[in-house]
Image 1 (cartoon, rainbow, N blue to C red):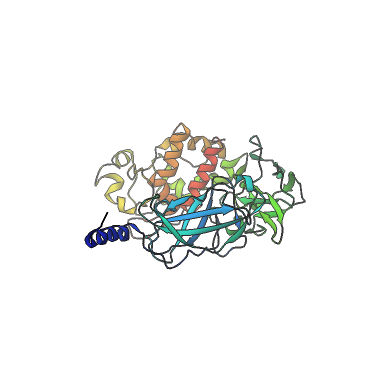
Image 2 (cartoon, rainbow, N blue to C red):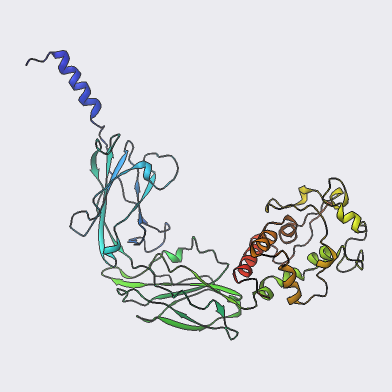
Length: 417
């Protein structure tokens, strides 16, 4: 059968349109390879579990990547899958040279071993038409051990003598000293470099990070007062890797918390006894004196039942001077400027009585909403602006974030008094 020159030209056009454009460069692996923070040791490692993150430079024009995980010198054990750029870990719009990341799985059977990984850049509109070209250089990394296992029934109360015994179960492949990490509960651990480093041996005081003897499954320490009233702790399993030395779990045990039994006394009672809070909570009492300590400024109008009951009405009562503009932006409950009822007078109350007052809203969820989101409470601990243009000294802890953390600790403990 003869084909005309026009037909040949049409066929060539179809083939040219079907063939994906060539890619000029190969992806470049970027360290840290997984679950790490740039610039910290230990970035030559991957954590097992739900998956690991691999990162490399984006190649202009690539629509797919073929990521291969392999035993050293072997074939891809993860099936060498084709991954669309749309499946990448979310980030900014793609540009050439931008670092992009993907989650890959299939590491559980390689725990404690070394593996290779590499990636090809591919073009094409669908997986069936994708053509993969330039291959990255091969990278060798180690697969870290999973975290140690902490018993579910571990004590959550710090004893009166502050002597605490930590217990856990190590992974069978752990052959190096495990790392016990104890931190004040308020420490932000989400971006702490120590938890992705090769040997997490440094923490900010008063925290502790202790390398124990190999195969150790418990450790007793006496906590310093600086670590009270609450701590969090975790254990990193560690292993000695050829040519790498000791490497510890990047993903630690889920943090376990411990607190003193009388958490209200340590965390919240200071705030309830602050002059600032007592002034407001005493304002509606019959024996409250203007200018007294605690008290309102000498030029302040007398607070009475009528004024207080009008406080939530526009331009009446407290709101005739105290406007919503003086309230913090945080919090989603605005009860209107007013003094609490005389029954909530904080003056002369014991810590136990103040604790019961804090529980007055009823259920834990109701207490949570009131103490965490009431704008008047948040104003007392984190704002303090008043109508005359000045700002009052703040009530302890002088921070909305720290106040909320203290409230959560107390509620999580069951609101004990």
